[in-house]
Each structure stands twice: as C-alpha cells, then as structure tokens.
View (spheres, helix red, strand yellow):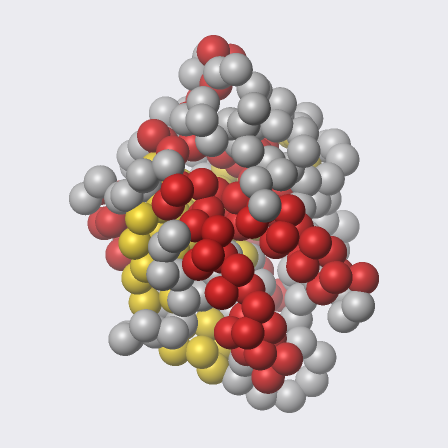
Length: 264
C-alpha cells in the first residue's frame, strides 16, 4: 500500500461504499456531516460542471438521510466514505487523503458540502495540480474572487487575526486562510516531512498546518479566485460554535503557527 511505507500512517477507521470505478486522475472530496438539502443542491450544481475529477463524499457520520446511497448515485457520486472513529474534520481529511492515495489519484481537491462555494471553479484547481502546484488555496479576496454576504465578525477575525498569523508563520502572502476550498498534490500528501497521517490531527488544525508547512518547506503554492456565498438572512451555516468553537480555532491556529505539529 502507498501510505503504509510512510513513517507515520495513522488513518481513522471508515466504511467505503464505491458506486463506480475510478474515472479520472484527480478527485474532489466533499466534507459533510448532516448537510441535508444543502449537499443535494451542491451535487446538483456539480452535475452541470465538467469537473475533470471523481466526486467523493467524506462523511463524518451523517444521520439526516442526505447521504442515502441511491440519492448519491443519482447525483454522480463515485464513492462514499463514512468515518467510524473519533475526531472531526481533521480525521475526515486523513481518511479521505489516505483512501485517495491508495486508489492512485494524483491530487485531491477539497470543498465543503454545504452549498456555499463556487463549484464551477473545481476544474481550475485540477488545472493547477496538473501544472505542478502542490497547495492550491481558494481565495475570495484576490481579483476574480467574491465574498458574498460574509458575516462581518468572520471578516474581522480573518483580516485582523487569521491572515496575519498565517502569513508570518508560512512566509506566504495568503489572503483567505479560513477558506476550505483547496487542492493538494500527491507529492505533498505523501511527504514524510509533512507527515499528515498522525492522530494529532482531528480538527481544523490540519488545514492550517498544511498551508503553513507547504509554503515553509518549498512546495509550489498558489492562490486562485473563488466565490463563497452566505445566506442573506437567518443563522449562519457553520459547524463552529460561537464561543467554544471559535476559541478552539484560535488555539489551533497558534499551535500551528508555533510549530506544535512539526515533524520531530
């Protein structure tokens, strides 16, 4: 197996439901947990795009029926992975990346499954991977990108704290460091110096860690424009709780910035 030769290869337990064989050299992974109709609407939009990638659902344990197999098959999904272990987003990420590498994909595009992102930009991420980039960050704040109805508290936290810390830590001029619309090359995911397959990565810290270390270690990094649209009214769709969740994000951010997860 590809990842079994790595120094670290801690992968969460999961169930795999493959609906059709591998069709492309790249895959796009949607991270979900109880996204309901938001996931279905996003998959419908993706059907209208020549993605140039297989569609994979990395489920953290949904119980709302949104990942029912017949529905996913009708929406063009290639494979469903269901985490059967501890941890949140970081565990879902390790699960998905390990599976993608074992299946022979050359790179992985990642996107939330909550219908907020510009799925029409997925082929642009694939293009950058083909061109040889290792870490492709989607940004709403460079020419061509759009931040629509973004909550002011999010913008302030991003501009005043998250982006400056990530820039200092990485040495790369990131502009949208909380955006989960990204892509990673096989080379980056397999790097022993990155060593992402460790049980310490259970939450958002893996996003930050990969962005920082990819730049610091000389991998080819780039930002490309994307759009993200929040609802005009009502509750902000998020899995991050207002106080405890946001505090945890800050702790994880500084842990990454101060090299807590660096390979010893």
